[in-house]
Length: 309
Image 1: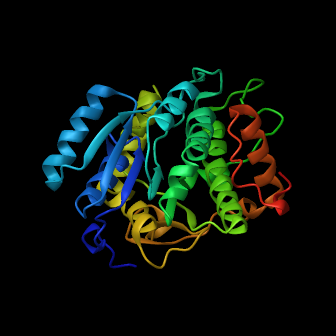
Image 2: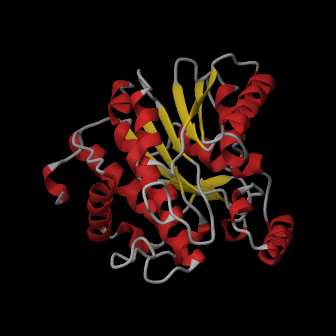
């Protein structure tokens, strides 16, 4: 694993991937890595202009004509439903990559706190609505992107939407640990239902991307830029844990991949451990049920009797 590069990915001809937030950064590098190996890649992007630029870039870098832009705004449940309704046929790989970080308090089109609503609820709903596409693939994989910030994250069930108190980094940490609770519970339910669906997660370490664009905190951005220059890595290297999780033969459901270097900030991908509370089944099921209530997406096909759902 420590020798893994994008060139080590095997032939992906005949496989279809959906990548959220694929217009730049980690998502774009993931799209390039998959398309270069023959996968059909759907770039699920919010901005049509940036998405078109990304589509042309991926085609140019890979020589693939099996790259397609489809508009998706994870901060809008209507957009998520429209995207899923317009996508027919199998999906072998879903990469839940898009996200926002430490933004000033704002809400999605549906009134959800922006970070929780986009990073967790958006991907929760999208995965549920694409469940039959994933099942149609026969063997499929869902890779959900988390962050080192999950280590300080906790689910505040009394204030999921940060309506009583908003702290941007706490809200970000909550959304990122929510990604991991979702990943683990999706894997449990797929196993119990007997589906050949592998749910895993990855994080990029300290990768230089445009994730900070929505922060609107110039002083903090200067500090982050200095940290990334010293400890971080490029978006291409930051995408390697995602690419490994998405394609490697030895990946197992519930795995979590990140950089192998000091503090998991940089380096070749390896299996890493989330904070122990991510394995708390009661919290995972409670979050799953609340997410179902909030979004109206119920994963009806994945309701094994032992989940408490």
